[in-house]
Length: 218
Ligand code: C5P
Figure 1 (cartoon, rainbow, N blue to C red):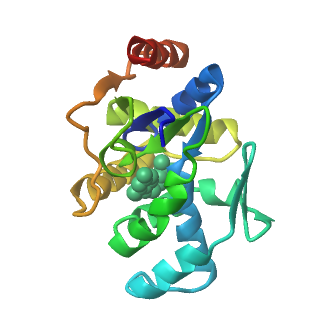
Figure 2: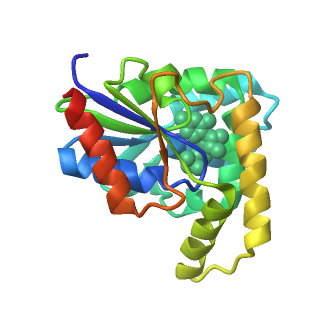
């Protein structure tokens, strides 16, 4: 395909999802939240009681999932699961299924199918390295673990969910470690990716930086 892709990878709670979505809006591009796909696989594996060591069954289940994105709403087999997959529990389960190569392979074509006219902003862990290596712009978006834990804390409190910063920090450090250390498609900055550290940057500044980088090459 000749449509441009902007690949944005980074650790959990870095703000990459928000930035990616806003960049997509600004450019009129499609948006792929690949983390949602891993969360859906995690959710479905729990719902259907498929243990993590049954890799073939997990891959077959993944291939057969009916996933639909309608605006910001996400549907699995026609049931809305938008909020159900956003919990910390599903984040951890997503990270566990994401460590299974058969699951990653089963999601490959689905992710590629999001690339349609006029272009795509894709966010995840391996967008620049594995799924869209041809991306015209690659961004590794990060922030310090402490700042990311504070951002996640504020998000949860705003939703009326109680949380403890120390526990959130612990969870996200554990998830980062698993995502960074896995053999297949680990979280890593692509050699040709721009580093964007948003520890002391507001969202609008980060969005503008990505849009400027994009216009510098396209
Ligand atoms: O980005 P999000 O927090 O929703 O991702 C949940 C988990 O899914 C991540 O911790 C990671 O293990 C996995 N994931 C992945 N590859 C992607 C996107 C997400 O392995 N491209």
